[in-house]
Every structure is written in C-alpha cells, then in structure tokens.
Image (cartoon, rainbow, N blue to C red; front, side, top):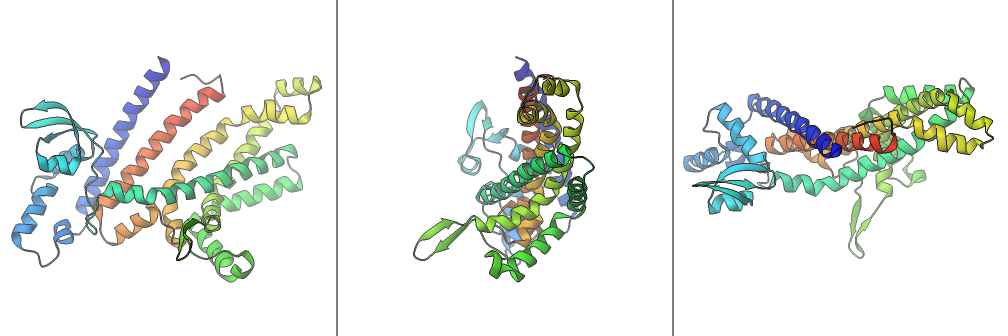
Length: 352
C-alpha cells in the first residue's frame, strides 16, 4: 500500500510538472515568428484551405482556448466529438459517451509535423532508438569507468594517482559536451581515422547493397565517449568522496578487524553503502543525456531525437519541437520516480 500511495503521489506531482511544461512551451512558441498555416498549406494556397487548417489547429480561437485545445489533444484521457473523423485522427477508445461527445482513452496526440505532415509521435518513436542507444552507451561508459576511477582514487587519497584523476575529472566537468564532441570527432574521426578505424559520422545501422542492414557498433563509440565525459567526471568525484567517507566508518574498521579480505570489505560493505549519491548522479545524468544528446547527434550526424529536433527548430516545425520537449520532460519524471523506488530497494534506511 505504501508503494501504491507513493506512486500516486509522485505521479500527481509529475502531471503538475508536465502541465507547467506544456503551458511554458505553448506560450513560448506562440510568441515566436512564423505562420503555421503557411507552413502547412504553402504560400500559394487558397483561402478555403487556409481556413480549414486554421480551424483544425484551433488557431481561430483565443489563446487560452487554444491552450485548452492543445492540452485536450495531448492528454491520454480527454473529451472529443464522437465522429468518424476524430476516431481516425485520435484512434481513441470510448470510456463514457457524453451525447455528441465522449470521454475517451487515447495515445497523446502531439499533432502533425508542419514539414512532413507526419504524426509527431511517429517521428519521435522512429528516432528514439538511436538516442536511447547513444545515451545508454554514454551512461554505461561513465558509470563503469567513473566508479572504477573513483575507487582507485579513494584507496590512495592525496597520492599522485588521486591528484591526476581529480584534475582530469575537473577538466572533464569544465568542458561542454559539444566542445568535447567537436574535438573528439576531428581528432579520432578525421585526423587519426586511419589508425582508429573510426569515421567522423555514421549510423547505428548501415545498409549494404549485398548484405542489407547490419549493426555497426563502432559508429557508436565516438559520440558515446563525447557525451559521457561530463557524467564520467562527476561520477568519479562522487564515488571517491563517498568511498573515503564510508571507509572511515566504524563498521568498516570492525569488518577489517574480523579478518575479512579487502575485496569483501570493499565490495560487500563499503561500495554498497557508497552507491547512493552515485545512483543519484546516474539517474539525473541519464535523463540529462537524453536532452544533452541534441548537439552530439548534430555533430556526429547521428539519427536520433536530438538531430530531428534541431532540424525542426531550423524549419520552425513547432509541433515536433514541442513534442520532443514534452517527451524529454516525461523521461525526467519517469526516471526520477524509478530511482526513488530503487533507493528503497538498495538502502533499507530509505523509506518511501
């Protein structure tokens, strides 16, 4: 029951956060220049076509009514007219008939791209795989090497190795991801490409005329390293400081006095209790990397949500940009709720 109450409470807060994001991006994009009707219909369209598109987007309504119309579109539970046209557009399931209208359940309708007229949700899902691979690989590299380097630094604090690792991590935190991405791409993907065997750009799947589509993991290496440098540096410092603090506790001295091996003391006692701040960093950075991958994807020409969003910004394709923003906000909320549950499983001192 506690878990259910906790989930309901956090989901309620998550809905409020998403509502705030919706209001913010809706009014932001309504003050930016650009004519959605002209983008959809073309500059030479007739008046009737423009009026139809205006009514379909709700642009003939006052701004507050447009906001409510947009919220009703993206809400999974909403009220729509019970018509064949709406059934085709929203693909909803009727929960409760309300005369000419109906309370329905549907996938959030993020509208259609101004450029391709394709549904925004379909565009995002088409490019989600690439971003998930990139963010996951970057976070895996950062977590594994960050914890390893942090433990090395904590075992011999204030040694030469410790100073080198800390100085390098400070440099890694200070350099923005897009700067690191450019330097890594030029160095290892261009100048030294004959030695590394890596290319400046590439996709996760490449198509060959003879073998068809096949997975090419080496194309993932450079963008993943560029994206993972900053979380790697943060996790290294957090692991070091947390391990130093845990290793000074009385129960660690007691475990050593009992004759336990250094490996059992480190892994069985110290590391487990030192992981809480690391888990916080990993969870926060995993969601951040989904958003931070935008520039890395653009630099390495990686097919993902970031690249398609930047392209949408350049072309004033507002529905795609708004849909991507909402999607990233949803991921932040989902990951944070998952990590709070993970805390309670790992550390019995944490209560829901």
